[in-house]
Structure formats: C-alpha cells, structure tokens
Length: 345
Image 1 (tube, one colour):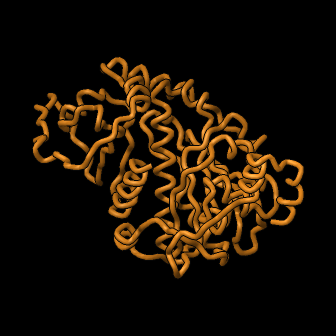
Image 2 (cartoon, helix red, strand yellow):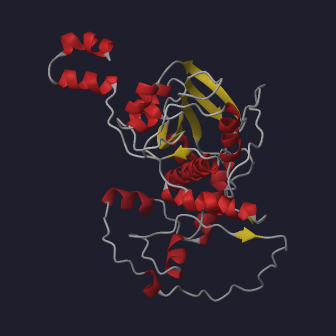
Image 3 (cartoon, helix red, strand yellow):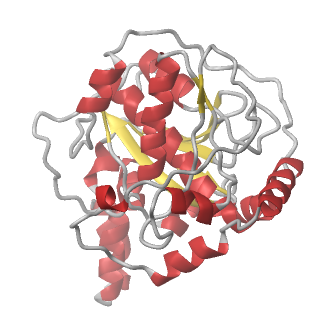
C-alpha cells in the first residue's frame, strides 16, 4: 500500500505541474538497487517513475557513468523485521538481464485481455471544488472514526471519476489496461441505493450487484472494525491473481499491489481534498471474495478503503458484528440458540 500511495502523491504533483510520468515496472533489479546502495533484501526497488516536461528529451549517444548513492546518507536506526516468505516471493520476481526485461515486457503486453465494450450509462460528474493539492497531501491522514452522515452523490462520483483510472504502466498497450477491479459497499451516499456495487474502471460505470444495508457485513469484512460499518462507502480493490500471474509472471503480484495502492492513494487525496476522511484496513480475504461472488469469483483482495464524514471524536469505537457473535456462540457450543442470537442483534 505504502509504495502505491507515495506514487499517487508523486503522480498527482507532476500532473499539477503539467509534467508527464510513466511507471516502469520492468527493470534489472540488482542494478537499480546497487545505484541506490540498498541490498535488495531489507530494501528493494519496486518501481521507477521517469518524468518528462514540455521540452523533448534528447537521445543518449552513450550510456552515462552510473553514480552510486552514498550509503551513509541512507542509514536507518529503526529496527528491521524479516519475513522469509515475503523475501522469497520478491526474489522470485527479480529480472536479471536486459533480455529478461524485454521478454517480460513483451509477454505482459501480448497477454493483455481484450476489453468487451457494452452499452452503458457513464457516471455524470462535475467539479465541486476542493482544497489545494499541497495542503491535501500535507494534511492527509488516516481517519479513526466516521459518522453515518451521507456523502453528496456528486462529490462521491467526482472523486471516483478522477481517482480511479488506468495507470501509465510500461507494458500497457492500451489506455484501458488495468490489473485490478474495484468493488464498493455503499452505506450512505445521497440518492444512491445502499448495496454492493462493481465499478468498471475502463467504462467508468457503477453497477449494483445486490441492494441492501450491509453496514454490519462491511464491519465484519474489515476485520471486525467499526470504521467500514460507519463509513459512507467502502472500496475493495481486487484482482484475479491467476490471470495476473499468467500475464505478468511472478512479478505480477507486486505490480497489482502497487496499482491498487496508487488508485487507493488517489481516493485518499480526493476524499481529503473535499473535507472527507478515509483510511486503509486489514480484512478477511476469502470472506470478501464470497460476499461479492459470483461476480468476484477467483479474485483476491488487495486493498480496502472506507471513506466518509469524519467524526468530531477521531477515536476508534468498539464494534462486534452479527457474524462474530454467531461464531462466538458456535465456539461456546450454543449452536441451538444461534437464530435467537442473530435475530436479536
């Protein structure tokens, strides 16, 4: 998440300066790590972001001498934690030669899925006014408590329209290319029916999957927390990892994670620029897939973000969902009373 949200800040800033940017996800990892004087284990490069302005770039006649960053300037006194599984997954995704980079990029581009365009009604949005970008980035933080007050529909759709879009990835052959999908639980948005939705990033269309009040379910899916239960809406970034890995190889997982982080970071900025709050959450992976199925069948959750109106007391409140109460009862052997327990909540 962190890498993506930082890239989101960068892309928003360069766009405001009318500078173009591209995300380079295929590169020789060891060479870039060496230039930055990082070991590739405790710290490793995940993405390069070249920038270009209005002046055309001049071609390089000969490769420049690579200057390494002084490692003394990068020393951290913070304790480090090692996760063997994470290191193994990252190691399996490394590219070691120029040929590997070119072959990987060609395969990822050639395996791009075809987009089937359907007749649809796009979301109508307009600019409702917002805070300056610099102020938004500096003041942005994670909200700890939401009210149940609704978000105006126009502002909700405007944030989605501006925040959620396909990224300029180095292997993309279309402006409609993305590795992630977006699902939403709407709890309280003016004139928009509460329920579970799918948002098509390519078509900019919000489709309802099932109507209903899902505040309690949202709280459970968000790792038994009040934040998603109280929020006006909860965004779930998901991906079919089997298809992602088939297209992008073992490098695909980190790219999908990064893309969800960038889009989630855009939501953060959009909501905070309009005076709303947002936060990132831990979640129950399989239960989210089940909740949004059959539409989300075979998809995995990458990032969850509740958004809404900030409570005057920015403190986490206790929460217990009906599902958790039911599971507690089962653990105590009270299965014969489950119907009464769940009905009374």
